[in-house]
Figure 1 (cartoon, rainbow, N blue to C red):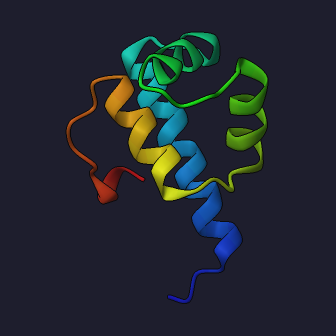
Figure 2 (figure 1 turned 90 degrees about the vertical axis):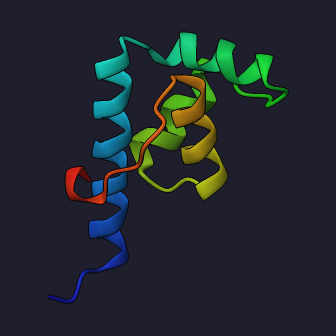
Length: 77
């Protein structure tokens, strides 16, 4: 199956949102945690990144680390 970049962006967005929900972490709390790691993010900047579904790999990995997610399961994405 050929997947478009829009489909992958949608999958990635849904995956990150699901992991945030599982961890009980909202965008404001994620911003706080990322700032503690030296990454300058606000609730607003996170909202925009996640809603458009187009964010860099570093943001995905840093976010997952910040919420304590230690495994990336592609079958869940």
